[in-house]
Structure formats: structure tokens, C-alpha cells
Image (tube, rainbow, N blue to C red; front, top):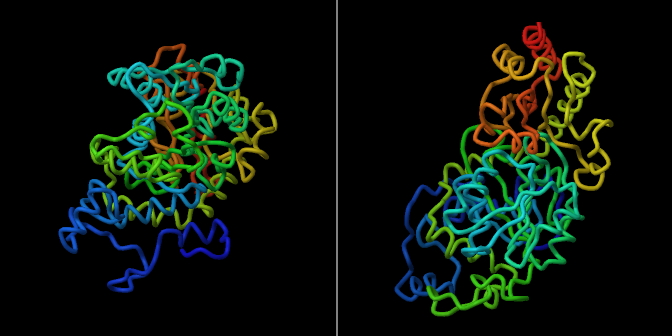
Length: 430
């Protein structure tokens, strides 16, 4: 879309990044199923490889279908650019890659998806990186955890699995004071419910597999750059501020300004890590985003109704949905997620571990899968699956204890979902 009027979210989710195909006039973004692109001449090829001209070289780096998706997500998030990749986990590594060096660390929320906790506590050690996990409700503890080697602060806007809301304004103030970027995983909220950049986030990451695609068909990830961080303000980020040997000493921050991180993500990150999104996956996600606002409204409506019903049910101990008046996070909803608290939360079932397993096994509409953000309602017992690799203490800190199930509420008829939960709870707690 061209510069001009400021369009609303519903318009941008359909049109951002999507232009009629110049060759055919096709209105939907075509799937450019190609590995390589013909150069106009030798000078054109050299200019592309020198980053002197923007264009297409090889689909590990850039692809027109993926580029349309990058522009759409970045626009919806209010960023200057985006880099799509093969999964949400890939997006997290892509976000950290330009920032980190051996011996450096990140300060991360203790309330994260179990796979992220494992990635940060175990896998990144192989790069010589480390993570300190802190309760992000304790702002003093977050501040105290940052040291001279910290290069990023990481959290989720709406935490998986419990649906807890992070006070992004408070956390970004801490990261700003330390002169380091705040990275926010916005998967569970999507830019329709929360725009982390407006609350001080430097980078936003997504598992596009979830709500953005919305139909459980393809995996993908995206890193969105706010363009607001000065990478050359100190010597903490040499990959962006210092000469890059692979490009004849070019300095990304100096050459590309607000787009430095985005260009580095493509020219270095995708080039060398190769965690590329394929064009067909990008196409599915582009189509999914066209209905994002409509789906999220129904997700929130259903989640609110079902969470209230579960909270009042004597067979449950508590419900963690932030949209409930009883939630300690309800006060943050108007500020952080003014359109709703999402559709992800946990339920503590009376009877503990065994009752949770029986509940999962007896549901008919809810699907027992390791996913969230689908149009279908989903359930999982996190302690025995997604958070299984964690210690008991880590499970409790993440809100995934043995007597808890996670619900991802879909867009079906809410009364049907309540009836399904009712009959399964009867069997689970008999």
C-alpha cells in the first residue's frame, strides 16, 4: 500500500504487502515457487550481492511471497521491517543472533512456553550464551538480574500456558535504562490484541503457526523490528555497529539506519542459519491473517464465557484467564490488551494429575494436540507434554503444574464447548 491515509487494522490485515501481480494482475499474492531469480545483467547481480540494491537472489534469503508476509506482519505490529523464518523457535534464535556473543546472557521471564525455556536454558548454551529466568511481575528482580553481559530482555505479552499479562511498559523502562533491547513474543496476543512496540518493545517475535495462520496447517515464525533502537549507541552490539567482514567492512547500523536489524536478519541470519520460510507456508499465513481480527474477537468472546463457567464449576480449583475479574492481571488488560485477554489459559482440575489425563481423554470437540491458536479448541496437559523436560520447580514457575491443563479456546459455538467440558469433567472427577 502506498503512503497516504492511515488505514485501520481490518483494512491492513487484508491489503498490507499485497499488490496486484505486475505480470498477470493476479489479486491474491501468488506462490512464487522458485529457488532462484534471473539477474538483469552482471552489474545487477553484483549490486544485489553487495546489498547496494534490494531484490531477489535466492529463496533462502528472499522470496516475493514471503516478502509480502513480512511486510504485512510488520505493518500490523507497527514495525519498520520483518524477517520470516521456518518456525517460532527459529524466530527466537534469529532475534538473538545479531545481539549475542559467547559469554553474553539474556534475562527471560520464568513464564514462557516450555520449549522456549528448554531452548534458553539448555540449547543456547552450545553457542556460549546463557539465560537468567526471573518472575517478571517482580520488576526489581528483573532489574537486578541485568548485568554488564546482558544483551536482551525477553518475555511473552500473554504468557503460555497461563495467559498471564506482562506489564510491557514497566519492563521496557527497565531495558531502556540498561541500554538493551526488549524482545516480546506476541504469539498468544497477536497485533490485534496487543502492539508491544507501542509499549517500548524493540523486537517482536511470532510463531506464525498459531493465531496468525489460524488453521493449524503450516509452521512459521517472524521477527519484527521496531526500528527505534540505536544499535551504535554503545559497543554492546558489534554485529550491527561494527564493520562486517563478509560485506567489505560495511556497518549495518550506519548503512541501513532503522532497518539495520532487518537487513542483518536477511543478509547474515538467513544466509548463514538457513531457517527459511517456504513460499507456500507464507501463502497460507497471508490468507489466515485476512480474517485475524474476526477470529480474535470470537476467540476472546468464547474464552471469556468458558473461563467464567469453569471458574464457577465446583470440579475446578482455579482458572488463570486474565479476563476474569478475579485475575490479578485484569488491571493490565485495558493498558496492554484493550481488545481482550486472548484465548489461552489454564485450569486446575480437582483430582490432580490423574483427573487431568482423564479429562483430556474424554473430550470430544476439544483436540488433544501440542499446538494453540487454531480455529479449533485445543487442550493439553502441559506437565506430561510441552513442559515435560522441565523440573518440577520450573513447571510450577511456568504455571504448568501436574494438576493443570491448558486450554486454547477456538471459534466454535461456546455452548457446545461448555457441554463438552461438562461431560468430560464428570468422568474425570467421578
